[in-house]
Amino acid sequence: MKTFAAIDVGSYELAMKIFEVSRQNGLKEIDCVRHRIDLGTDTFATGKISYERVDELCRVLREYKEIMASYKVEDYKAYGTSAIRETENTLIVLDQIEQRTGIKIEVLSNSEQRFLDYKSIASKGKVFNKVIEKETAILDIGGGSIQISLFVKDTLVTTQNMKLGILRLQDKMSHLNIRPGQYEMMIDEFISSQLAVFKKLYLKDRQIENIIVVDDYISAVVENKMSAVADSCIEAEAMEHYMEKIREKSVSDAARVIGMPEESVPLLFISSVLLNRIVKVMDAKYIWVPGVTLCDGIAYEYGEKNKIIKASHDFEQDIIACAQNISKRYMGSKRRSETLEQIALTIFDSMKKVHGLGKRERLLLQLATLLHDCGKYISLVNLGECSYHIIMSTEIIGLSHLEREIVANVVKYNHMDFDYYEVLGQKNVHLDREAYLKIAKLTAILKIANGLDRSHKQKFKDVKTTLKDQQLIITIDTPVDITLEKGLFYRRADFFEEVYSVKPVIRQKKINL
Image 1 (cartoon, one colour):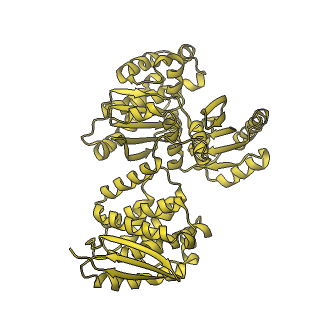
Image 2 (tube, one colour):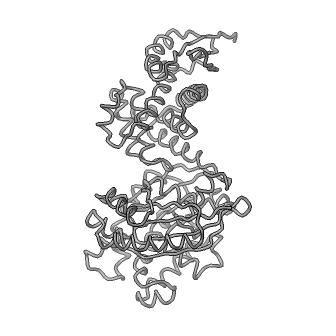
Image 3 (cartoon, rainbow, N blue to C red):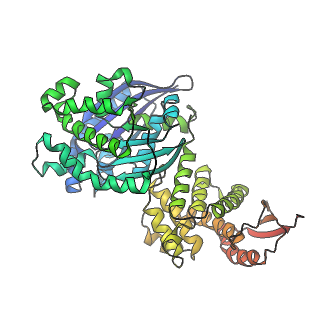
């Protein structure tokens, strides 16, 4: 058993949960502390967090550190989200915090943050798996943005981010000097166009049955006042009827009825209107509010990575499904991708002792094979550049920004001459030496896999690879002529040999049909 602390430096709240993590009991929450701190208003309005806010943040984090010591916490993770991520002086702020408190805060990309929120829901196990049996949307409401993820037949088919976070909307409305009674109409005007586009592009004829809500305010209301149904689905109409009655009250009366600080009530009003509009757009019947937070996802991932908790859901398959749907959206060839995937992963697995890469890099290569031709949707001439920009502009839930950069570059240089570190480092200043080498190694594999199926006719029934005496022997079972593949393969093999000092060689084993 381990004692673990999860710290969420959010847009409007600093939260910490202490957990006991064990194989026998999984995650057991033993304490939760929260401090209201409005970092998001500073960031979204001015682009920077003020000195006063940083000072307050450091003071509270020192208190949290004392709490961790009292529980004899063995390990912790502290993550910053959009308020930290979108500041102009992120590195300066993070360094100040670490120097003054001893707590290191890592910044999550949006897709990493939403993936952890998603894991926090999955920590509910059987209830989550039952809910997503039907077509379901996860609505993740944050301070800076919202994320909508769609599940069809247990599979994540798309996830989209919109800058419609509750602090951002509150900031916009504060400049308009409107009354709480006008919130509904104004929010509707702010969000209706984006929701209409989302419906046209991603909902189409889908009938969404359930909406899973992850937020801090609606969750609190459900937990405090509707706790009897917290682990099951609430009818959307009943939820809206209850929230409508709350919105009709004054801020002070609403705060008293639902047991919430007055300063939080306007944010609850905004969250409830957002939810209501999305329910109407999707025509959803039920809402499930699991009452989890980012801290639960942080702890779940910690237990999973340290092999204390066994995941009940295949999260890696969700990342792959996301890439497959991006490929489908941009008219990618499914058969061609499947062939490339099989060849590239076979080569990767046979080269383990040489490339020194792990399971995560194997996943990135797999994603690159799925997205290898997405750029042709825009241009057949500038396929590499267009593919790069599509991947960098499209959210792949569960990948960090750096991992998405690696995938995008591998796809790009599959179609173009490779840029070495001096050039690539100038184009992408945040790519370090380690990331550059991963791009080179994965590109080398994808290039020869692509060369083996250059005719796009999937000629090979079976591909086997063996590493022997500085040669990668690729044995192909096929009765057809592969003169084209051999010619183009050896042109692409030069880069592979340069990266690995291993020469790839094709051996054709003709089979009788």
